[in-house]
Amino acid sequence: MTTFKQEALQYKSCPKLDEEHSAPITTLSFNREGSLLACGGEDGKITFWRVSDGKLLHVLQSSKETAISCLSWLNENQLVAGSTMGFVFCVTITENEIKCLLIVTGHSSVLSSIDANDNSTQCATSAADEIVIWTHKNGTTWIVSRILDSPPRGVDDGDAPINVVSMRWSYRPNVLAVSYAHHGIVLWDISDGSTIQTINQNGANISLSPSPGPGSSKELMAVSTSPRGVNLYDVGKNGALVGKLSSKSGRKDTSSLTGPCPVAFIHGGEAVISGNPSGHAPIWDVETRNTVQHLRHDNPITNLSVHYNKDADIFYVASVQTLKQELNRSEVTIWKTVDITRSTRGVERKNNPFVAGFGFFGGVALAIGVAIAIFTLTHVAYHDVGFYSGVGLVALGIITGCIGLIVNLF
Image (cartoon, rainbow, N blue to C red):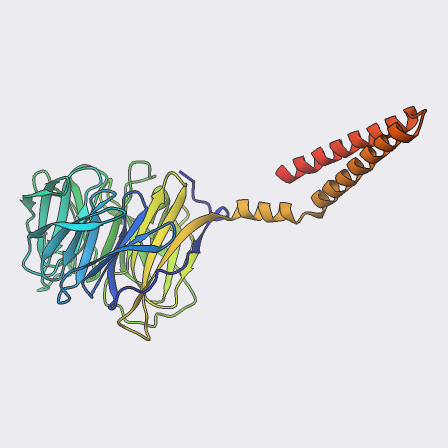
């Protein structure tokens, strides 16, 4: 995996995806391979896009009276999506077709979050205060394995109702991290339904992202409760607050916050990205706590999805911004990393006059040497001097050309 360095990797935006949704996009997610991006919207559509060229592959239209509220990939070609009517759709997609395999009616209210475990056949769904843990077999047979209890009382809960805001599986087996509005964060042990740890994080809109694995310097959790920044907690020990990530973008928030600010670990846990209503998505280096880049948008950012393509060694971010002038429209942008030091070296080599001079002189010397050698061999009886002069110029041209080639390469 490429180590994230500010001077080496920078995100560049790809062309925005075509407008296919007639209402705001509420959720999006890359598949496990990073080859597909799925988007769900308030218009009841799920659209599937090819990441390499931004081509729309398929559109799945559910009832126009229900919105797609959340989605998550089971594997590279199977997706689960939640709706505002409490349904969970299980969908299979290939290059040529798409079909709905199953509809699970596990909740009686709006699905707020859904997350499939990368390392098992578990999938968690939530609606209001309900959290259901499912086990599935290739996305076809679904069984309820556990229903979690209500969380412990939070520090500022008062009489606030219990509502799940976000949840994510930890890399540790059977561990699910859940944030509740005004009731903090709970790490659940799914094997027995017990509470492993609680974090008394205040706020109504709590978005979270566990660190991706033991390769990180610590077992951290990134938590966003406002546009002002992100808190880092060490959940590997006692859940202590170990750092705060803040950024001054020079832009004031011009939109009221209506939902959680998305947050995610990227670059193998070495960096964190977050989106907010001001239209910028800061990227922080976890070790230094410094902001290393902002992904600039013109409108409030409502959702993010991230992916690392191991084969191409490229990091991807997909962002959703809701247009302030047209509240019923959203735009999706895919960003990917570019090694700017490598591309800069290529530009310098291409325009280096020293390299160009060597190449030009070598070519001229080679042409003159060959011409002299041919002329002396065909027109001069005693051509030793002319011949060897030609040979010398040919050798000089070859040496000069080789020097130019070496300089160009290194």
